[in-house]
Amino acid sequence: MQPSAHDPASDPSPAELLAARPHLALHAMDGLLLEGASLAAIAAEHGTPCWAYGAATLRARARALHAAFAAARLDVAVHYAVKANDHLAILRLLHEEGCGADVVSAGELLRARRAGVPAAGIVFSGVGKTDAELRLAVVEGIGQVNVESAEELDALSAIAAALGRTVRVALRVNPDVDAGTHAKIATGRAGDKFGIAHDEVAALYARAAALPGLRPVGLAVHIGSQIATTAPYRAAYARVAALVRAIRAAGHAVEVVDCGGGLGISYRDEPAGSPAALAGVLAATLGELGVRLMVEPGRWLVGPAGVLLSAVVRAKHTGGHRFVVLDAAMTELARPALYDAWHAILPVSAVDAASPATPADVVGPVCESGDILARQRSLPPLAPGALVAILDAGAYGAVMSSTYNARPLAAAVLVEDGHAHLILPRAPLESLWARDILPSRETAPRLRVLAGRG
Ligand SMILES: *Cc1c(COP(=O)(O)O)cnc(C)c1O
Image (cartoon, rainbow, N blue to C red; front, side, top):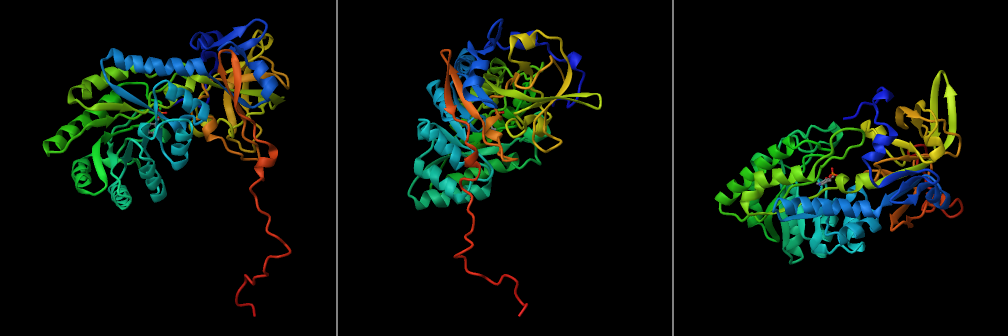
């Protein structure tokens, strides 16, 4: 958890932030570059706010993850958690890098298919899959459904049996482990809504084996997000390993363990989750079971690869306070408002970057006191029109956007080989009301809605 207010003197310096992010560089003339592409040029071409993602960074992270598992002699299938960033361009890129998809809705399932992920490479997670979504999963023939309750198991069995299909099912275990992360992104504690209490799992597995239309293939667990230490993983996977043994002792086959996502990244100066350390924990806790391992990382793969580009609307001084008002807001990046998250903010212009900094609150224009992107940051003077980059915004950024205050969804570009490809144009203002319906004043029947008035 990040502090919501702090001493800016303790923040990492711009030089330290850049040193830790090799995909970003400050060019003396062109200012801040993402994988060699000028962020100022991207803003000039596509406007602000605008998301920019680095393709080489995404590829490098996917490769580093696979390499860490290979180094530990583990066969681990990576299913990218689509909810972290669901642009088709990014799904396709990660698929090219050998990642399947972990989806939590029909929309995500179809997005992954549209991006070219084969059905067999898709895992469906989530506590509230509707019957229509379960039917879609069965009809598409996806690789695995991670079932979160006895009730869902029955529903899925009925749907699959009626369609004459057999669906591969894993039971999601709630291991009752605290991931030690922000309360709003912890998912593996006994009181959380996710998964099946671990003392009920073995009996439910036996029931799944007896139900028509289902083939129980293993267990799944996901304990939360932005996890930086191995202890919660170790505890959760040890419990899952014990369950695998118990289920096998009862005579059932267990072929896979889906170990979930949650690897954290370093937003400020906190330690990032380490794929090598995760691989070590997997090997130690589950390596001897002879199961096929799966992981579902989201944030770790895409978070560092994206920035949110924004322009200063107003430099405001009042009541002894300095505010930098941006054209980006909580409607683009909700994480600071939602989780008190800390995101680094750098000026894009090299001239701005070289000017003396003073503390400022960085806010958006939305009519909410919570629309604060950063408190008390050391920033140089930033005149209206000056550009800033909000770093590490690749995960849980654009996907959480809203059009609150009638703000159209921002544009997005993918930088590849020094070229910024537009992957989502800014939504036109008209899109905000394009699907609204004004009831006709002429033809609507005049219903008497207030009864009993004679
Ligand atoms: C959100 C989620 C993930 C991905 O979490 P990250 O912290 O982004 O890695 C993986 N699996 C499930 C079931 C999830 O809900």
